[in-house]
Amino acid sequence: MIAVAPLEQRESGVINQMFDRSAIPVLEQVVNFSQARHGVLAGNIANLDTPGYKTRDLSPEKFQESLRQAVDGRHARSSASRSAMLQGAELTVAGPPRADLDDFSGVRESIRSIEYHDRSDISLEQQIAEITKNQSQHNLAINLMSAQFRLLRAAISESPNV
Image 1 (cartoon, rainbow, N blue to C red):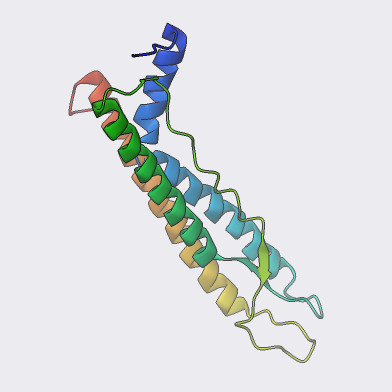
Image 2 (spheres, rainbow, N blue to C red):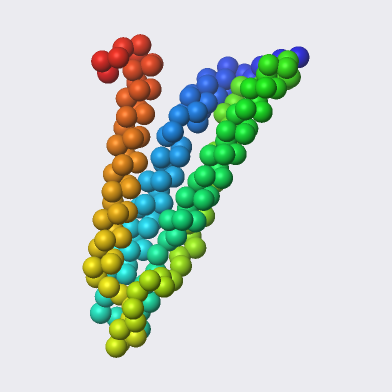
């Protein structure tokens, strides 16, 4: 038995599926994380002269693990839905649920810096190095998103020159 969604839901479902099956949702989360991390790192630099200030950071490792789990879950849902469709199960046209990766609110205290005489642990050089790495990650994600959008535009217009 096949259940068919109303036309409006099918059209938005097809569009959502097209975007959800691309790398765009993952890249969007990378951009969001790098923007949030940039704010935390900039706050560290802003407090460079604050006595007793402890540097803070968002854990790239924790974010990457959350992202990996979300991508693995998305692949598992995609494989399960494909096999269910092949077995004649009920079909509904809707995109897979987006992974909630907004779990980078957990700002951690940095333990990599040496504590200075004013009890702060801010190293300007280290913070600038972290901002530079973060900016590179942000720029890479933006460039990959642009390439994905160009591919989608070419697929929609059926022209490779878009």
